[in-house]
Amino acid sequence: MTAARIIIVEDDVIIAMDHQSRVESLGHTVTANVTSAEAALAKVEADRPDLILMDIVIKGEMDGIEAAEVIRSKWEIPVVFVTAYANQERLKRAKLVVPFSYLLKPFQDRDIKLTIEMALYVALVDGKRKQAEEALRESENEHRDLFETMAQGVVYQDTDGSITEANPAAERILGLTLDQMQGRTSIDPRWRAIHEDGSEFPGYERADAIKDHEGNIIGLIGLIRDVTERKKAEEERLHLQAQVQEAQRMESLGVLAGGVAHDFNNMLGVISGFAELTLEAVDSSSVEHGYVEQMQVAAARAAQTVEQILIFSRRTDAEKRVVSLGAIVEESVKLLRSILPASIVLRHEILGEIPGVMADASKIQQVIMNLATNARHAMWSEGGELSLLLTTHRVDATATKTKGDLGISEGNYAHLAVRDTGAGIPPEIRERIFEPFFTTKGVGKGSGMGLATSYGIVASHGGFVTVDSELGAGSVFHIYLPATAAEVKPDGDIARDAGEKVQGKERVLVVDDEPAVLRMTSIMLQKLGYSVTPFSDSCAALDALRQSPHSWEALVTDQTMPGLNGIEMLKAARILRADLPVVIMTGHSDKLAETADGGVGADTVLKKPFFSAGLAAVLRYVLHANCGDTGTTHHIL
Image 1 (cartoon, one colour):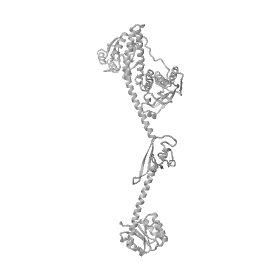
Image 2: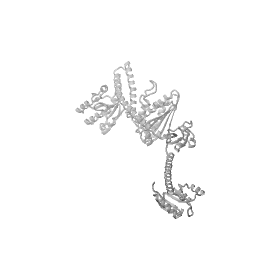
Image 3: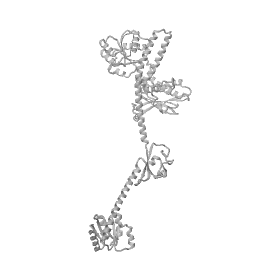
Image 4: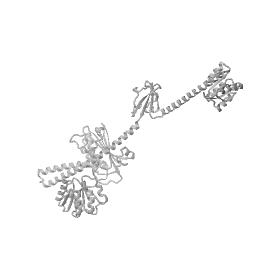
C-alpha cells in the first residue's frame, strides 16, 4: 500500500514513541507527534496529513473525541481512535464523530498494520464517492440551469405519461403553470397545442424515452418549441418570393404581349388603311360602302384592344402632366352613376389635401372605370356598395422591402382604394387576376383585359397595385401613384385635329419591311400627291440615300425592321443629310427615347395603325417645321 503521512496524538511520551516506531516500521511517515488536542489541530492545519492516530483521553481542554469532530468537519481527514478504556459511554460519544477505526491498547503490530490500511482504504473510497457526488451535483446544477433557461419548452413525464416537471419556457409557451400541468398527460383532452387563453401558436412537440442503465424506460422527456417568429419569417420569405415571381411572370407576359401587339398593329394598319382607300373608291350609297365601314369599325375596336395590350406591357408613352387625382375621381363618379344599377350604392370620399400626380388623366380614369366595372360584375346579382376612398400614403424603406423590392420607391403616394362588397376573390385565382385575357366571366361577357390593362397603366406611371380580398366580404383594390410637389395646372385641349387631308407634291422615301404596309402607305401618299420611292429593305434604302441624299424631301421609315431599324436608319440618314425631315412609324415605343439622344431626334413619331388624314397632317408638319429644331420629337397619338 502507498506510504502515508500520519500524525500521532498521545500525551504519554513513551507510548507515543512506541506508536511512531511501529508506524514507521510499516513504511509510513510520522509528520508530528503531539500531546494535546490543540497542538493536534495546529499540526493538521499546517501539514494536512493522510491519517491521524488519536488517543481519546488526552491532556488539555479538549479530549480526542472533540478534536476528531473538528478535524472531520473542517478537513475530512480520517481519524483512528486509540484507547486503553472500553468505556461504553465514551465509545458511544466516539461513534457520533464517525471514526474510521479503533485500536485498543495494548495492540500487536499486526493490529496497527491492518487498522491503518483499512482506514486509508475507506478514506480513499469515501473520497472518490464524495468526488462523484460533487460531480453529480455540478452536473445536476448545470442541467437545472440549462433546463430553466433554454428557449425550448421541456416537460418530464413518468411512465404513465403524467407530467412531473416543466421548465419556464414550457409554462410560457403553453400558458400554464407547473402546478396546472402536473398530472396531465399527453392524451389528456385539456393538453392542447394552443395557449391556455385559446390563441393558437405554431409549434411542434416531440417526446423521447428516458432509460436506466439496463435500458428500462423510466420516464419521458417532451420538447415543445414555439416557432411563431420562425414561421412568420418563413411566410414573409415565401410572400416576397411570390411577389418576385409574380413580377417576373408579369414582365414575361408584357414582353410577349408587346410583341404580339406590334404584329397586330401592322395587320390592323393594312386592314384599316385599305378599307379607307376602298371607301374612297366606291359609291358612298352602295351596299359595299356600308360593308367596308363595318370593317373600319371592327378595325378600330381591335386597335383599342391592341392599345390596352401595349399599355399592359408598358410599351406606350401616354402624355403625362401634373393632374389632380381628386378631380379625376370626381369626374369618374359622375360617369359611374349612369352605368351602375340601382342595387349598387356608390360612395366616394377624399380625405385631406391630395398632392398632384404625374399622369395621363384619361388612362387613370380608365383604371377607375375598369375596377368599377369589375366590382359591378361582382355585385350584379345581390347588389351592394362600391366605395372610392382617396388618401395620401407614405411608403417607407421597410414597406418597400415587404413588397419584395420590386422597384417601389420610398416617398409619398396618392392612394386610391376601390372597395366592393361582392363575393370576394377565391385564393386559387387571386394571383392570376392581372393576367391578360384571364376572366371568370362567361363567353361574350368580357375580354379579360380590364385588370391587366389597369395593372399596366399604373405600372407605367411608376405606381403599384395591391389587392385584399376575403370570400364573402368583398375585395379592395389599392392603387398607389407617386405624388409630385409640382403644381396642378388646369386642363387644356391637347388633342390635335388633323382636319382635311393636306395635299403635297414632295418626293418621299418610304421604308417598311412589311410589303402590305409599304404598299398601303405608298398608295396613301401617292393619292395625296406625293412622289413615292418605296423600299422593303432598309439597307438598300440607305444605299439609295447615300448615292443621292437630296433626291427626297422627307423620309418615312418603320421602327422595327431587320437590318437597320428606324432609329439606326434615322441616325445614318442624318449623317448624310442633317436637315432631312424624318417620320418614324411604330407599333410600340420601346426605343423611341433614344431618338432624342445626341440631337438626332425624329421630327415626328406616327403610331400604327393610322389613316391617310393623320399621315397627311404628319408629313405637312415635318416639311414645314423649323429644320433647325431637329432635337425635338413630336408624337401624333
